[in-house]
Structure formats: C-alpha cells, structure tokens
Length: 420
Ligand code: LLP
Image 1: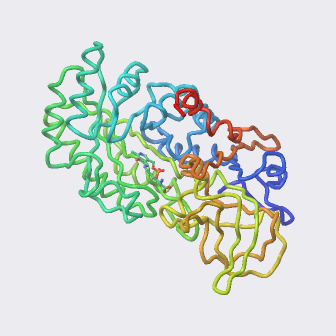
Image 2: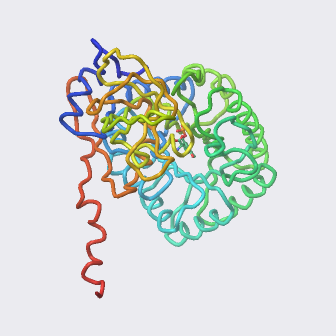
Image 3: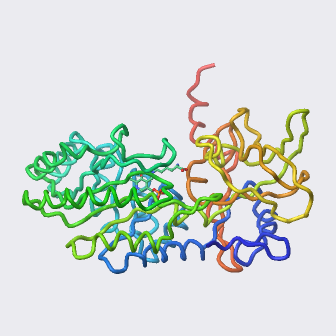
C-alpha cells in the first residue's frame, strides 16, 4: 500500500497534486510520502512484535536525512555500510546502540569512527577484517561487539547482481570454517563475539530461501553454544521484495509470522535489515517529456530524467511502472522511455505500452523510493535531482536540486594549481 493515487485523473502524493510539486520544485524530482514510509516501517516492525528485535533500516536504500530522521523517530535502528552512512545516521539522531555495520571492505578509519560512536556491532566478513577490528579496538582500549556474516549457501532466486548468500558470492564466511573463526574471535583482544549474521540477497519474492538460511543459522547457533560462545543477536539481514510490476512477495506480516514460529523461545534478539520493503514504494520519480520521436522502427519518449537519476533499469533491466501524472485518456502506443544521456543503455522503460504523451507533459516512475536517488550520480554533468517529502498537505524540501556550482565546487582549487 502506498499513498500515490489518482483523484479525478490527477496523480497525488498524499493530498498534493504531483503536477503542483513539479511546478514548484522542477523536474526530475523524487517525491516521497511520509505516511507510506511510516506505514511500511510499522507494518514490518510490528510483524516481529512477539520477539525481542531491532528493525535496523538499511540506509543504502534511501539515505536522505529526512527519511532517516522519520524512521529513527519511529524507533528504527540502522544498518550501515560506510563511514558516510554512519555520519548520516548520527546526524539524523539514530541511537548508536541500534546501529549495525555491514560490508566486506570496512576501512580502518571507518572502524575507528564506528567504535568511537559506540555502535551495537560489526558484521564481520573476513578473518583479516576481524584482526583489523581487534587491533583498532585494543589500541583504544575498547571492546568491539561482533557477529560473523555467515554465507549459508542458499539460492535466493533473484537477480545475480543482488544475490549475496551463495558460495560464489564475495560476501560473508563459509559455514564450514566459521566455527573455527568464532573460536579465533573469542581469543582476540578487543573482540566480543555476540551475534550471527547473514544476508542472502535482495528483492526476494518468497519466504522459503529465508527459512532455509534461518534453519542453517539456528543449527549453527547450537554449535556455538556448545563451544561456550555466548550469542545474543541473530541478524537475518534484509531482502524482502516488493511489487514493481506483477511480483507477489509475501506481506511483512506473513514474513514475520513464519520467522517468529521458528525463532520463538530462543534467547536471542533478532535483528532485521529491511531497505526496499520500507522505502521502495514510498517514492516516485517525476519527469517531464522533452520530446517525442518516431522512427521507422521505434517510437521514443525522451524525458528529462536519465540513468544518472534512476539507474536500475539500465543496470539490472529492472521494471518501474511509468504512468502519466495527469491522465489524458489517449490511445496507447509502444515506446521506449529514454533519457538525455549519451548511452544507448540510458532508458527508464523499453517496449512499454504508454498513452501517446506530448512534450511538456509529466510522467511518474513508480517504486523509486529505494535505490533511486541513493544510486544517482552526476554523469554527463547533470546536477542531481531534488527530493521532497510530502506529509498530508505539507511538503518539505528533503534535498535541494544541485546547481552547476555544486558540480564543480570540489574541483575549483585545481584552477589555481594548473600551470597553463
Ligand atoms: N543488509 C545488507 C547486508 C545488504 O547488503 C542489503 C542490500 C540490505 C540489508 C537491504 O536489502 P533490501 O531489504 O533492500 O533488499 N541496488 C539494488 C539492491 C542492492 C541491495 C544491496 N544490499 C537494487 O536496486 O535492486
């Protein structure tokens, strides 16, 4: 469920006509719905209410400070993967004791920063990382709480680029040698093993792979207890999918219920790291038609948003529903919706049946709240889009549109240093 609906043929974000937002803030424009974010977070979080748990929103999905602040105010913790994300989470007022730090390549200065902040735990992905954390923690007299990210070798049946829990993936540690790694962790100075972690992939549309992974982890947990390692947290990562087109992922409630049945009674706090399921359908990307063009083989709709704004279609061949912001009831034709970037891979949709739109009209790409702005770039020296958060009849500018000066600000110093 989301709050982007048509009233009298006009798309609204909550109570505001999207065409008004485009007029006020320009295009391309990311529009978020506060009520949708809140509802998604609460639906997910309450699905686990029978268990001690922390819902650590995965910051990478949408890291806007407005979003982080809102979720923090609802009690969310955060799953971070960089010093930059830690900085954002702390700025947004997230409690450090609800922050978990994932990722295969944490730099020493990032580890130091996270220890200084007092985060809940590091999800460690290699023995070398473990030794690095131990050295940094003991040098500053601190204890780093850690879990090992276990690779349960489960096929999540999703796009290969976002499948992470199979043996061939770069993530985590294999189950076979992990018991030994826990033993090693226990003996290292500055390290306290407190958890087990896994994340098998993203945009999963069935519960089975999660359960398969969970069963393996619970068995593993038993072995750790036998070894005298006191595990208190079980982090199951993120990955629950959403409907972009015709997918029918499990509702968070069903997901929570299935996991709760398996986990009830275990003396563990469960950590979940949802990203897409919270943010995906809480945002749209609004774009203006610049030109239409018919060639003997194809019809094109050229819009002012491009792969630098929303890279998912180009990168993964992902589907985003595209629709008119104001419906005109014109006949549909088959088109490619493409951006201004100088690459043939720059498209938002291919071979799509769309009403015959005209230049100057607005289109919305749906399900763009996760991995939309967060993956955007300035490629082709295109200033990044603005982001707004709508709350009923009120709109907050969540991020101003970048300017040409923003494009060059970090480079200006070179003009003085370059010798002609
Ligand atoms: N935890 C970890 C350790 C992760 O690597 C991820 C996502 C998540 C949680 C959140 O997963 P989610 O609940 O959002 O599925 N850019 C891709 C998705 C990449 C996901 C990377 N990791 C896309 O646009 O589909």
